[in-house]
Length: 300
Image (cartoon, rainbow, N blue to C red; front, side, top):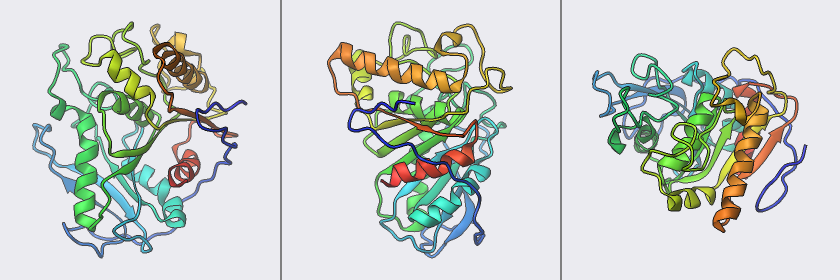
């Protein structure tokens, strides 16, 4: 498999997994810089009209300090943020990473519109204010974690798998930010293509995005991380809507289609292309087995 990159050709990364034993601590209190191990805290989110707080799961190795790198981890459609956090624990311990995983539970974020499509529109198509998008929660959760743990970091790595991978690549388009050091979208089921020619959610047409926004997006440090064995066209969670099928029969193909579309747009616009395509041998649709390769890319 050929791996394409703007800056260099990366070697294939062997997948690893497993969850290391860890200490579990009680809900961290704001400013509790001694809190280490695994736990969660509750975050008040203005856009949630129910008033229910959002759970934010974390793992903070004993070895980390105020300048340690923070990785925001976006779960898949199973909404199991704690499970995704657990899959990152051995890599966080080995590399000195602080893991923060907000939970978009189905009670508050019932479907794809509210979660992985960013909740940019209401059910009737009415646009929502940017601070009411689900995308806005990433920075809120990061800032809350940084305050609780005494972190001096102002930027973070961003990872999402499956529906979380969809969340990440759309976040990078619709939420222009200087806070993301590198973003990794892993094994997304389908993509919002970087074009105004197709309406949202299959493209950016009908949104506030401009061609200049797309040009900037194409230069972002976005990694498409694809499991080479994620090739089941009949996977139970795979979107097979007619509008999606031109992207390919399975996730591995669709990721390559998206990457190629980005490269073509960058060439058409005459702008630098900052994305990278990286494949992981022997891994199918597994968030935990993509965590190790992702952690090393973010740390590198």
